[in-house]
View (tube, rainbow, N blue to C red):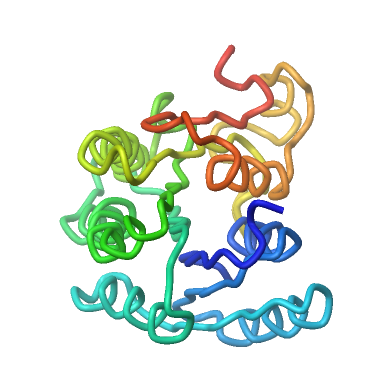
Length: 246
């Protein structure tokens, strides 16, 4: 298998889509450096499960991505533990409403840090190691980068910036390193929140496949871009069940 023995760092890996990506890559034989911020119990449970189910060598790294030293520290920790790096998945995300008239500098800074600054400087720190391995970067975007979500302006705009960052990095880092992104549609409902632009059935109806996707759909796309897409770079792979057709 192409992925067997490859080392991948995933940010925001303890839960939800991040955990699904970890499970997919573990099933493919990858060794994993898994970042989390506060979800220590869930991260530890995930690692134990990956070890029991797949025999995965998985290493946890805690860190706050808003701290300027964290990106380089995460990469250094992964290299110290595994000695190499073949893939970086910038999955960590912050999803929160911010009505236009109530947006604060802090709201903007929080989104910009997680969705733009952290992926940029994680990639910068990873580049020497990814060049050695001929590795790849996958950024997790959102369809709302292209269809802005009312009441979520900082989220939508910084996710759009992440798509621009993906394309710019693909130009900067080729030919040795490929950089792509995945933009999910509805694969999980936001925790403790009603859908922001209508009820759940309404969102499903505005979708060509008339159903919600799953985190595994995103994980499969990430796996493809990391290991099965040698002539693909600067691309945004939309996984939304046809939501952007409406």
